[in-house]
Length: 225
Ligand SMILES: *[C@@H]1O[C@H](CO)[C@@H](O)[C@H](O)[C@H]1NC(C)=O
Ligand SMILES: *[C@@H]1O[C@H](CO)[C@@H](O)[C@H](O)[C@H]1NC(C)=O
Image (cartoon, rainbow, N blue to C red; front, side, top):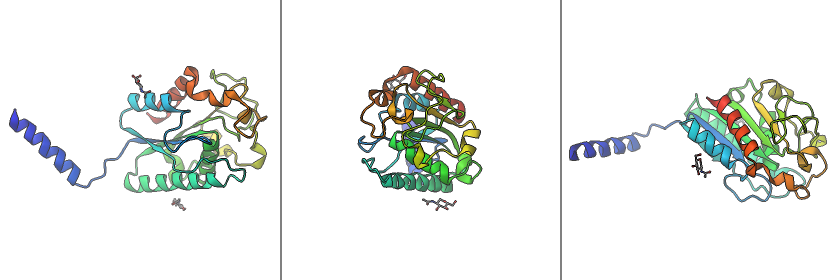
């Protein structure tokens, strides 16, 4: 009994000191919206939890960036660089690891920027197996993966409030089927009548909607398994 405990302890120590990286199977890269404090976005907590519990071997990275209000969209470039650095270094250490990108509001803009830099066929792009956007200000009408809060098509034709600035998801990414862009009915940010995140209570509903969270978890699990 004691010997067994001892050998387990030795095993644990030798694993810690051996220096070999433990590679996650996948990482959920979660990018929060304007005004949310650094950390996990309120928009994805239940779907992240369900995915990590259902599919073992995964982990989470909270994109490091200010998420400050910024009409120039400059802060989003800080987030974009954080994600790209993270993916590059993760693939260098663990080449078979995969990723999902989750973006909320300004975080969706950050995610769009990454998708614009990494084509689906690139080394990094092929490792990105799923993209879940919520309240995307660059929502484009009638794209594959557009859904409303019930998984339906009532907002499929919406054009996001900042879409004319052009930081949109490339068509090649929609064509992969790895993207879903969830736009709540009456969320003015993705429906095009509120650029400031502040006029639409529906923009704040995603994290509290069982149907959004269940749909997102199912999408992530289906793509990452
Ligand atoms: C995560 O999911 C489990 C199982 O569904 C649940 O018991 C737990 O409360 C959840 N935790 C959080 C932080 O949501
Ligand atoms: C990630 O790697 C690519 C080459 O595959 C390089 O062009 C790019 O600058 C790198 N990005 C960062 C942020 O390190």
